[in-house]
Image 1 (cartoon, chains in turn orange, cyan):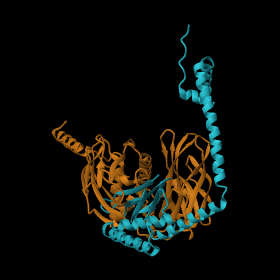
Image 2 (cartoon, helix red, strand yellow):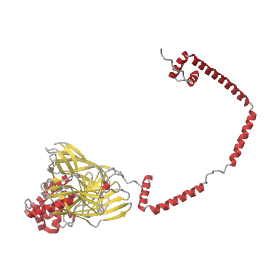
Image 3 (cartoon, chains in turn red, purple):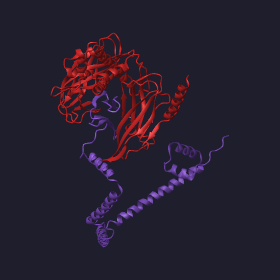
Image 4 (cartoon, chains in turn brown, purple):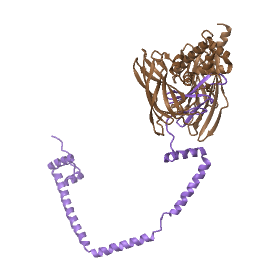
Length: 384
Length: 205
């Protein structure tokens, strides 16, 4: 070992010892705790313009934490999930911050910002622990191995994001390599108004809605991807105004492998016929080859426009977003699957809009074709 | 030769003479008396005394019955006693009388005013509002906030509300909100400073 690397190892050990004990700031408002053997440790921790003020019968804490983390492991980090837990909400509620599409080499530092607000009644008792705790839930490495307690099942989420990122980088790199620049521009939709994904407001209630209203049964239309090992067959939901209750989809495993979990994606059509990808929800589903099963989303989903106006539900579609096999491998739709799934260009763009696509689009907007090309080269195999 | 059993006590013999002993004790005393002349004599004395007492009691009852045979004089005596009682009650009518309703209301109002003044000076207004809201909820004047966990998005962030507390993870207005699980909502955006995609999630159970 050279003298330089010895000093670096010593410095990292000092940082590790300091980090293992955790850090607290802001009068025990926020605590950061990483395990001693974590491959990711924080170098610095800064509370920004955090404030406390009364709001009604509660106290509102505005917390703005800025963390600088370092990869002290031996593998590049591809994704990271930090768990955010508030004592007052345990065990019912918690939060997380996911950083997908990372490319942090060993020894490199990277920033993470967490902006949050905690609203707690004045009469709520306070323990000795910090009001909000930030900890590591999962770190995904470039070789798709992982570290962390994974209490939020974020390893699966990070894996899906990473597979989508690899797919989208390959696709864009191929367009670039083949000189298909008009297609690339269309893909990144530079200059058009609907560049950003369509926004909607969401409310998820874990109890029956108070306003029963006039419910009506609505058929859920399946959207199939050709190579998907699990196909949606049919579905139904109860709809009332801007609420969808208990959507249910019957699916069939058409592969020869056993399935462990399926993430069902939902597309909502509003009263004007515009379609929005409402998200996807992974569910554990032990599904043998050729077997069928029913996937139900419990609770009530309430949709609104970003301005807060209710968005009336005109239609509902379901698609298989990703599939986890019993052997731990994952399936995600290919770009050609997405191309063939629908003739609607807006919906196609919505289905293909992965976090990595969003990030690369932003790079293209700010730095142009050369910036995008440089970024794609940065991720190319053997570039590091 | 077996030793002779001791004599039962006088109380036991007295009870035996009247047939008031319990089954087992009565059998033991009866067995002893059957073989003991001394005790037989004592039991005989008790029975004679009891019979004498009964006779005397009957004679006294007859004497009392004869005394009240004079009903008119007894009626006069009773009416006189009632009249004396009524007069005595009138004499002590004002003693220990409860205060009037007006006085009671005045006292209660004064105490309430004192309580209200003390409350306003010592209890924060937030607590007062909280208490009033609870009272409104309990009495049905206000729709209660449903128990359970609610996840929702706002233009500023995504929030999880449970147990009276709310955690909101803030995001820029450009963030795209979506469902990310059976009980999770996420918001995705590109950080303007770092260019990094960040996905905030809130979970409810």
